[in-house]
Length: 356
Ligand code: FAD
Image (tube, rainbow, N blue to C red; front, side, top):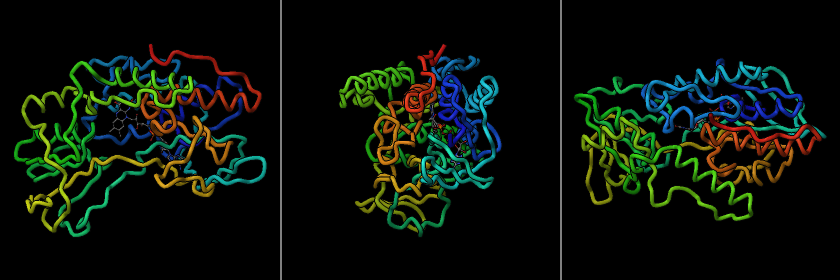
């Protein structure tokens, strides 16, 4: 297994039940995956009991939605509880075909594996779209992954780019700061989910989609079309009620001092925060030459079509509905381990409740 974040741990949980021999190689010094790096005020968009990995529910928190630190504590305890064999820090440099087994090369030697599960997430591959003039802009540009606290941007004129949860939460964070001027730009008008809809509803939709896919219905229910994209967690609701959750259309180019629109409008700014998403972190799989133009690896369920000994878990809907969420990672991991157990003649994986 490559990657010891939530997806890797969920797969480890199921692998334990098969009796197969496995290791989890993780590049970081500490448990917690991407949750170690979120901004200070980051909140989950589901309550704890709906953000659990298989087997052991996430402990409740005093607040409506848990913080990133709470998730790190949960993943740390989860790893210990199930005695998962995580080796860290071990950076996987490349996976190679080498006879009957795949060879996993790391800075600390190589492993030979009958099967490899890649669960390296997306945080490590931030995506910044190309805009004319981006190199000319003399202010500061940062991606979601570099944002920590609003204080470091106090008194600045900030442009936030992107119409998703990260952008809305960072806008909410910054807009409460005296002296900071924030402009939000999105490709299409931002769509806020109704207050009563949170990650639980999104997960129910993903579960229906998975059932449809298992029944051979490829169309399924692809998402929350018509509902919206942004979960109205408390700070976002407060920002909406303050009237600051308003976006301008996306600019067309950057200048030395700011951003410009095709109609000639211009806005000077000091900082641009690109909340423009991520790509899967798959560089270690490059030697297998499986990637497509989108940077994905074509899969049938979780198995790579071009390399049947490789499974991908946790990267997003293309590896399984809601697989890039805490609760969805469990279903995705079980699907992968199920196939591996059958392939290798190991004990089958039985269904385990994901949440308490
Ligand atoms: P990661 O957490 O990124 O873990 C991957 C691990 O693999 C890391 O430890 C990394 O160091 C390691 N790794 C990477 N490359 C290598 C390599 N070559 N060799 C060895 N190790 C490697 N989900 C929810 O369920 N609820 C939410 O409210 C929610 N909010 C989110 C908010 C934000 C801003 C973001 C970005 C995501 C959010 N998510 C949420 C989505 C999701 O839960 C996270 O993206 C999650 O961290 C993905 O888990 P993972 O295990 O797939 O990857």
